[in-house]
Amino acid sequence: WRGVSTSGGRPEQRANHSSAVLEETDELIVFGGWNGTRRLNDLHILDTQTSTWSCPQVGGELPRPRAGMTLTPVRGRLYLFGGSGTENNYFHDLQIFDRREMAWLKVTHQFNSDSSAPPDNIVTVHGQGPKKRAGHSATAIESKIYIFGGSSGSNFPNDFSVLDTDPSIQSILSIAQLEILKNAASSATEKP
Image (tube, helix red, strand yellow):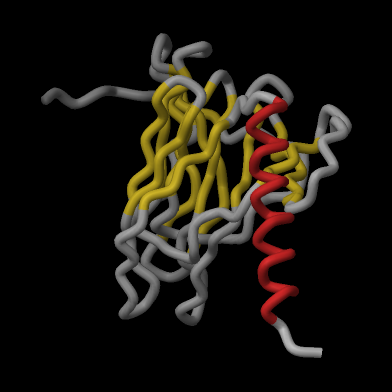
């Protein structure tokens, strides 16, 4: 270990923040956390070549302040999942930061068979994601993000989920067909 001297506006002291390295830009990006008084939703970038911090203006809708979330890099984008907010409020939302656009993208969820392409600034997520949690782990392998564990109050989920950030159209249709079958089975067992 060795200390690193940096310049620029350093982030304020914090705990339970998330950070990730974008290899494409040689940057360490820090998001959110807890400063001892409140939860944060700011974003700071350390240029690892010059050891210079910046706190850029970013576009899109900022994620709500949180701590204990994960920030996972995949091909120039950062995938933020989960975390805890105020008053034991836990999240299970997925937020995506596009470094090239320097903006948070709009994320929608789709559970049906419509596989039409959304506009460039909107990402559509197919299928059911993990339950609310903080303190979990998330690891990227190629285009997939694997999420495990964490907690939500006194609940400690022991489940494992994967998000394919670059799914084929066949996998999207398979997920949609599975959701249709689940809904049909559920409807068939309901009494009129």
